[in-house]
Length: 292
Image 1 (cartoon, rainbow, N blue to C red):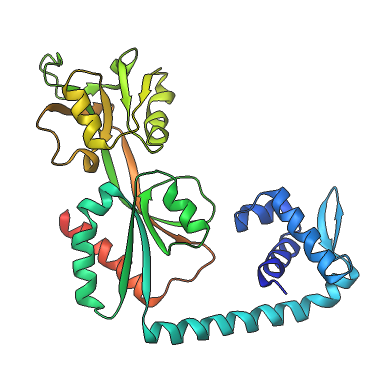
Image 2: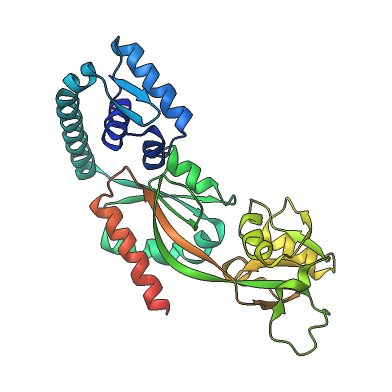
């Protein structure tokens, strides 16, 4: 018996709605409907009664629900016991992080964490795609992510840092004494869009202001985009971690009005953080406080 299907059945029954349940568990409504239909075929009789007012347990479903709750509790106890024993043996925390975060934050974070928890291994996976950490988290392939905020219902999000956006301009760009770059000035210019769905963060800033980009997607890394700007091939916009240590050949000025993307840490809403995962989280929070 698939405990996941039974958990979703219990959630849907408690909420009285597949729509509400889909928002809680992170599935589409059609996906939940197919899952419940499959569960009913497996059991051999209907568990839910559907109407325009929502759903409720059938007579058979009501009769089974106490046993289902008991089964799920016993299953949770078993998983907790397995996890406790496994952690005592050797815990591995799997992390997925943007390359900019992995480069500038992770070495110090892992150094601090290793001093605190020398027996715990960390498997760090560096990604260049804005949505990949969330997809890995959703599929259970990673335990913690460090990324920019995106709209994924599976993610329990902890804000960490507001990362400022900068205009990336050729050295001879006529700033005329300005210390910032007006966002509306991007309109009509050849805009080199960093790869890996960074356009999500860029467009969330520009579109509310009505700025239409002449955007060229660059399937190259951030450093190459910066070098292309340096050769006068266009302009771009990046964050402070993306450009750190790479600005010799270009002008980098904050955009105005001030724009940021929120960096944070995510764990799965339906998976309990281990004590060591909590210690790693606290290490990151302390590290960012120390940086000021």
